Each structure stands twice: as C-alpha cells, then as structure tokens.
Amino acid sequence: MVEFRSLTFAAALTLAPVFAFAQSGPSVTIENPFARPSAGTAGAGAAYMTIRNSGTADRLLSVSTTVASRAELNDHIREGDVMKMREIDSIPVPAQGAAELKPGGLHVMLMGLAQPLKVGDTFALTLTFEKAGAVAVQVPVREMGAGAPKQHGMPKH
Image (cartoon, rainbow, N blue to C red; front, top):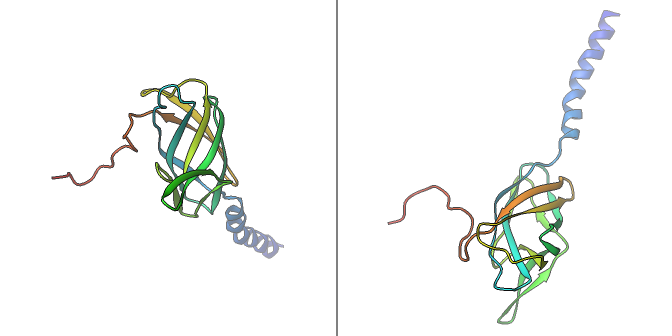
C-alpha cells in the first residue's frame, strides 16, 4: 500500500510539469507606443509600437479605440514608384520575438477621429491577439518627427 502511494505521488510529480507547460500561454508586452499629431482638421491618425512576445507565436487580430470611429491594421506597400497603405487582416508576432509597428511600415490606422490628436494627449487602444486576448495600452501623442523614446547607449560624436 505504501508503494502504491509512493508510485502515485511519483507519477503526479512526473505529470505536473507537463500540465503546467500546457497551461502556460503567450506573454505579450507593448513597448514604446506613440502616435503623431493629426494634421489640421484631418480625420485620420496613426499609432506605432513594438509588440514583444515571450511565449508561443501569436497574431494581432484587431484594434479598437474610443478616439476614432474606426481603427485598423495597415501596412505600406510599393506599387511601382508609389507607396500605398492597405488594410491587413493580422500582424504576426513570432514566438520569442517582436513585431515592429513604425512609420513607413506596419501601423494602426485611426480613421474618423472624434477630435484632432494633439501633442501631449494620451489615448487608449485595445489590441486583440489570437492567443493573448485583449491588451490595453495608453498611447502618447508626440511631436511630428519624434519616434519611440531614445534607447540609452553610446553617445553620438
């Protein structure tokens, strides 16, 4: 009888790590979100960020906000000598990797802005991932030409 309990306990210990691994999910974090101010009375804007994933591969499926009537995932494509934006269905976020949303590339397009985006404003976005679910992020509006915050490193000469 004692051996049976020991065997059952040993079996439980053997299975525990497998169970824990099966329950773990992707870990998505948003770094350096920012938007640029909208031009005059333009009803559109864009948001950028880095999406880091410390888990299994995931996909950003959609974005929502209260500052615009529509938020969509966009990419820039080149057709001949012309750069065009187009809506895309999702943005892949590789396992143990990152997806970079930046000017001239992947980004969140905000259309039908309730009011212009002004430097110093902050607004909320909800990013919905296939595996990670909904992730809320606060997006500061930065001056035109400003990008993600500078990283610390070697000084420029």
